Length: 170
Image 1 (spheres, rainbow, N blue to C red):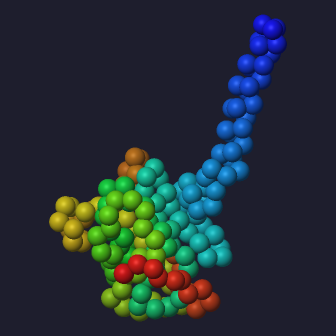
Image 2 (cartoon, rainbow, N blue to C red):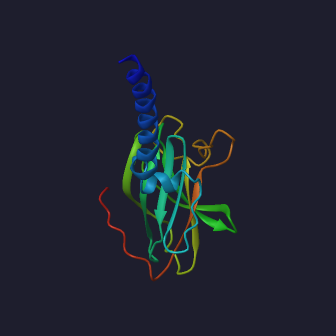
Image 3 (cartoon, rainbow, N blue to C red):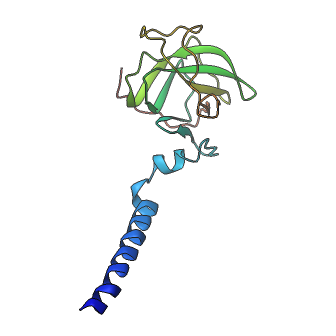
């Protein structure tokens, strides 16, 4: 009986650890979460996203319009999504921002821009903190940074061939 127990306990522990590892790899963090945890995604088809810790942003390729739909945002402390023109891969002028987002995940955020976008253009969606008043102010609501001090943003493309995203919020 004791000999059988000595063999059974380590086997159960090994099987449990192996099961947890396989479960994590094949299902626990599937889809967007697994892809976004690789930091910046550059998919030549339609998707870009960014996640560090509790904060994430995902914006799919967009049709030319004066509206951008942000597919997914997770902001641990609340804040804003701000749309910038792209100068190379650097954030240029602000051309739109979301309303104040509550802490946590939000999907399908519609942001009205100050100008229409153009086919082939790249834009930057950047996460910004709130200074506590619930209203976006460029001077006071600074970009969110990761633990290494990097600004959290994603670059997305405007394309006449993009699928039209659905809007479920605002």
